[in-house]
Length: 524
Ligand SMILES: NC(=O)c1ccc[n+]([C@@H]2O[C@H](COP(=O)([O-])OP(=O)(O)OC[C@H]3O[C@@H](n4cnc5c(N)ncnc54)[C@H](O)[C@@H]3O)[C@@H](O)[C@H]2O)c1
Image 1 (spheres, rainbow, N blue to C red):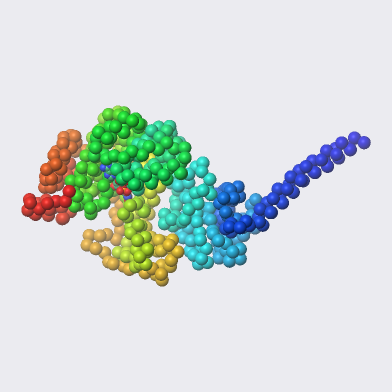
Image 2 (image 1 turned 135 degrees about the vertical axis):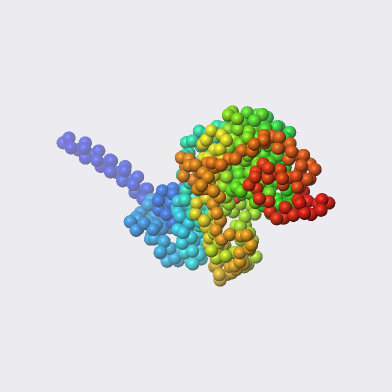
């Protein structure tokens, strides 16, 4: 009968696919049961796309030495679901029980857009049962094209303060950075180094890292080489105070785009090093801007600070002058813009490293007041917004980044204690020291509402009151150079006020400039 052919075909089909399906199931179940010596039993927290990708990567890379025993997911509908042979065992509430039952050695959080409070809850639960927890980076940090499993890291304080991903118009940034040579000054600093990382994601033809701090640049180069093996990164030692060296570097690489992040930034230190502040932040910026013009750079982006708004410090005043300088150089050809923002979390010398030192010393941690709040941005967030802002405008703008919601300093302190695996108030005490004169409980958000215009991005505004100086900035540059050479403090303060009339010098500087005897040396 003719049906024999059909039957024969069906039997063959069943036999071949059956063998394949059986082999696959057997392999998976063997893989699931077998735990190779040295492998760590882990749970993946998050059975979404990132969690599944992580599972696949862990399985295909034995060197990671992870054995995934299950997923944890807070979505009740995922409970019991089988994902490539690994089950969703329960929700976060069951984390402690699951960890003990399956002798879990580590929890891997695969929730790239988890909020700060969600991350804090997971971390607290892991601490309660004494299991280590690590995470894949937040969306802002994920390096595309690199396995997620290779990006697993410890949970950081930034994760606990919210990981609201910045909405970026990637195509505009890509179109601007892709295939271009980008020069970053102050490349090894907190902002400069993150700019390098973020720029690297957009495949420039090369990044030139110009920096005076040799060791920091050395470390940055190593890190970038590891994270972005295809990136052409040229570390270049030099000072923005040295025009010849700048010329040499610009001639060598002909950068198309420039991010200027080199500066002195510590407010109290600059109050006693006023001439150095002017030489670096104003005259240095002028050198970089001139070199950029001479060598045909298309876009110049200066990193500024909200301390430049109604400045009350030398640091703030010098950054305001740098902004005005940049504006005065805008003449229609090359595009000069500045981007202003407030504190970033964890930058060199900021509150986070100080808290970490206090924890390392066994406490106590000192916080001014239980209600003290400050605005913070994460460094990746600020850097991404800088890249976005630099795709906007026609030149001559000062962009201002929206700092979001203020953070309670005491929460920051508690989170840092948790991250060290210790218990706030029990292992490490927090002491309230009281508000100092002139200090505010709540930071005002500098003129964001009243003096700014919107842009297509909700977190980027344009400062509307540029206030260009009447006389040419370039003649002021010569005056400032002369004043610095002669160490004439009173002339400096008067000139700073003339250029930036809203500069309000500190009592310390006024005393030194106008009341101390002329023989009193001012640190330089
Ligand atoms: N950190 C913040 O919270 C924050 C917030 C807003 C704006 N900013 C602004 O960003 C800029 C950079 O700040 P940061 O936090 O990255 O500081 P940082 O000290 O970490 O980085 C500055 C880098 O510039 C380098 N540098 C200084 N002088 C130089 C010179 N003459 N030549 C070459 N390199 C030089 C330093 O070695 C350092 O690596 C500053 O203008 C600051 O006001 C910082």
